[in-house]
Image (cartoon, rainbow, N blue to C red; front, side, top):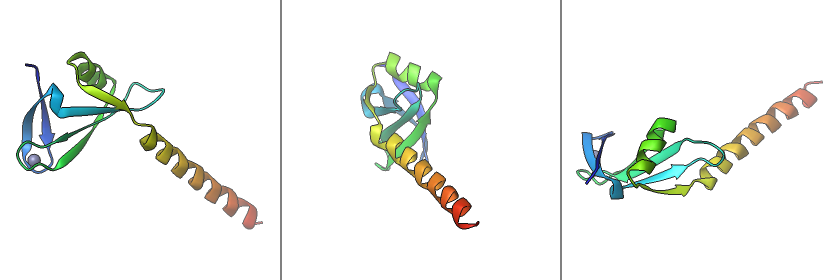
Length: 93
Ligand SMILES: [Zn+2]
């Protein structure tokens, strides 16, 4: 079975099977993040996945979801930030 070497923030290096990981893909992009439960401390870990990592994970059969919520939260935050800037600009006059 193919194993993936990654790191747990508490335990350091860990080896996982493809079935231990879930990849969250960013829509309209070839990146995302993957999550796994550490086999030692059982804490859920998140790691960013660049294009290369995404390609590797998909190639070894990691299951994936399209992380719409993650993206829309970011987009909403960006929208709120831009609104704040806009409000500051018009109220500063
Ligand atoms: Zn751990």
